[in-house]
Length: 318
Image (cartoon, rainbow, N blue to C red; front, top):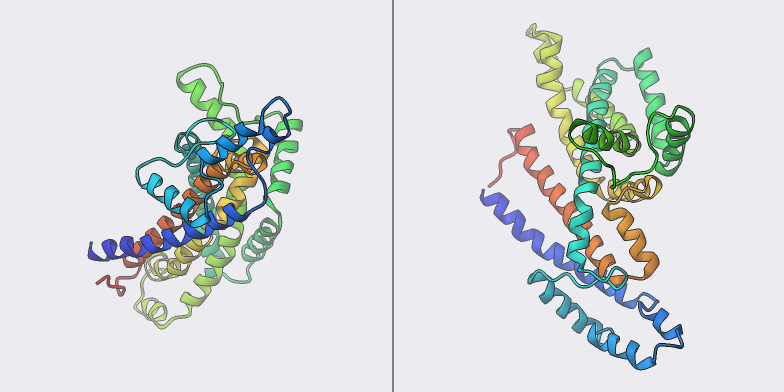
């Protein structure tokens, strides 16, 4: 418990530092959210000037950041210039969809990568290992936008099995409604699972190859323990420690892939919200979404640190 409290306290300076960098970059970036008003002859320049003064766009960067930080700590994340609603409301609308898609894809990727990587690592250079390594290399080489388009062409255009556009206005109730939402989520989840599972499979295989040669594994086999017990208890558990590190460190990459995937399938998540905000130069929304991404990455890294103690009892949190 003390370790968790210390890690949470250490996360505060990291979050503050990230917020300073993000806010400074967005404040110094070119573009004006009220440029459309300035180009409209029917709107007097005083209106745009009054709006800039209201939102403090002409204040120094450090003063604007201080006002944003104080407002955020009070629960006010700003006001969207494009949607005309609160940023926090926009993010809370979209965040559950993104977390569901990313969470389901991670579970599916781990369900594929761990058993395939372990079996390939225990039986290196076998036919299964060669096929799994080749497929993992292909999956690792394909970007998400290409995989998404291939899935749309195959499963939507030719086979007509799955919808290629995510809809939020589906009618019905009960099991038919749930099945409709599951069907339109399958392809985004599969694309992200392939994007994550391919490199994880190769990494699990390499980690198992390192552990299976260690002395304690040889000793366990010399004692006559069944191969299944040796693999599950002595190999897999120790091999998962670097895998947990990889999963935590790849969270920014996963969120980047989710942004592209949401654009391809029109998933109403915070990734598509970020792209729309960038195109509209909606800096409060951009700041809010990127800040949420940063907080989620820090949270996943903290979770990975806590999992180390469960996977390896030699690690003590003091």
